[in-house]
Image (tube, rainbow, N blue to C red; front, side):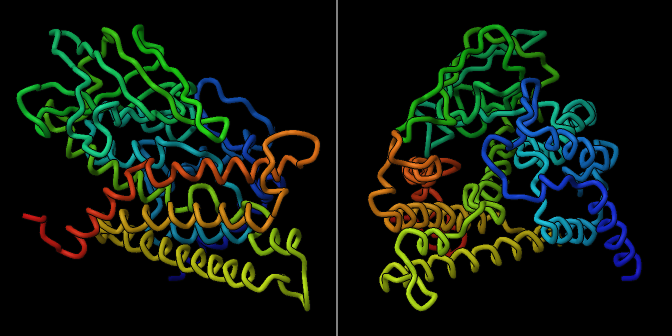
Length: 397
């Protein structure tokens, strides 16, 4: 315990000295750091903060030091997280590599693959995207048809993916492919390759919100070195399932970006647009629903913290990730809809001088949130997982 308190004191002192002041303010979208070859620094402090945290391995504090991580114990990682929250520090790096790929590489990759890919993830040198869903394989992901043929000294990939988040900005992709057409789950493999490889093409998909992180991604005779398959051919489904657990846990953990550093609260916004009476939101119905929503968000935050501590203690929280994903999607949709409602006609803006940028963002965020119940596993699929693996219900016969 004394050693842990010493670590806390040292961490607190290091953060006080090394976390720039602007990195203790609410995150704004244009300053989120995704890393990669094409990273642009809207705020120079973001680069400083990433470099300092990555140098200590604290972008991935619990990963082994030999792969660039911090090598912290579970207890130390919790202390670091607490101290970061205490100063409202921004996350130095937003990364599918940190949230999804890295954990499964630690579990399934060989030593050469770990040494090649993990340090670049920690330092934000590589931006990854995920190649899972296909036009004919969404909820039934195991029906994927992207073909991966053994050509002796390399793999040859042909096919397409859809809803590939940020594929047009990514450096590399972790991709599910079919190496055996005679088997379903056992015919799937997990490969990694550079998005600049000849034959790779991305096309952004425009959503109702006016923008989109999603893309269609096409592969035409894409050559991939043999060494870039993780695990053995036909065993990619096990890796895919494990990665989906991390994905659902991490994209849900902040309520799809509605994190603790996101600026004005829902109550603040309601008071601004609805008005205040006796120090409370003037409209009783809006006040009641805002209160319920904020209580839900607090309970959700505590649940996330509990699950994170259970996971660090070695507990299997796999099925719980489906509950969290479903709850987070519903929570963010309700929040954005209520916010727009509270703003009245100012919540209906799309463009023009009559609306402030934050008001237009609220409208588009509400529309964007509709996709929360699809991405990272549909709500329907997650409810089925809860029914079977948590509640133990039988399939209908």
